[in-house]
Image 1: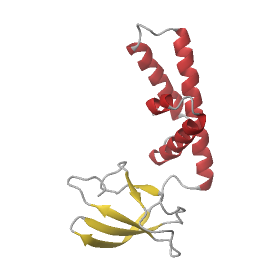
Image 2 (image 1 turned 180 degrees about the vertical axis):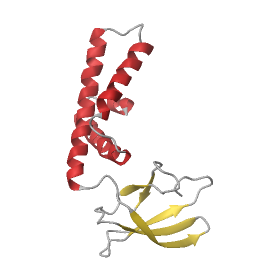
Image 3 (image 1 turned 135 degrees about the vertical axis):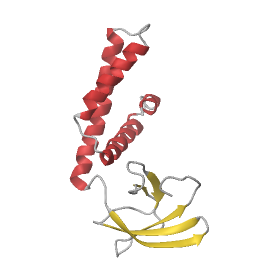
Image 4 (image 1 turned 45 degrees about the vertical axis):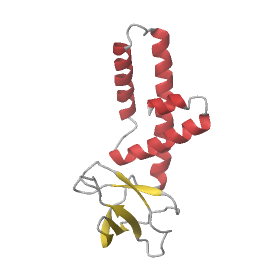
Length: 161
């Protein structure tokens, strides 16, 4: 994330969009606003230790400013997202249709409406792999019955496949 932020430091629109998405995504892991300062202290501590030959007060101040700004964009995006949607949805598998030996269409019923547009993807976790998320594209446009379908490819030793 820091490398991506540094790569787009001169493109505010891209940088802010990236950080906002990251902040919204951190919600599913239970990240709270009070976690960010601790991460920042650890980051600054590691940088000062491992870059001690070039580290000085000006560099530390610059990193503190940068991290403070980055984390605040993420915190604000998570707060806005919290007002419009839960951090995650629970869903029940209602259909599993094997189309080929390694492709299935999995259909789930979420516990509440899941807003999406055709072409979007979502992150899926299963009870067998807690905190391991795999991205799936929706296999259809939003349906009137609220069900969600995904094409899933089984891969050897695949997590959430």
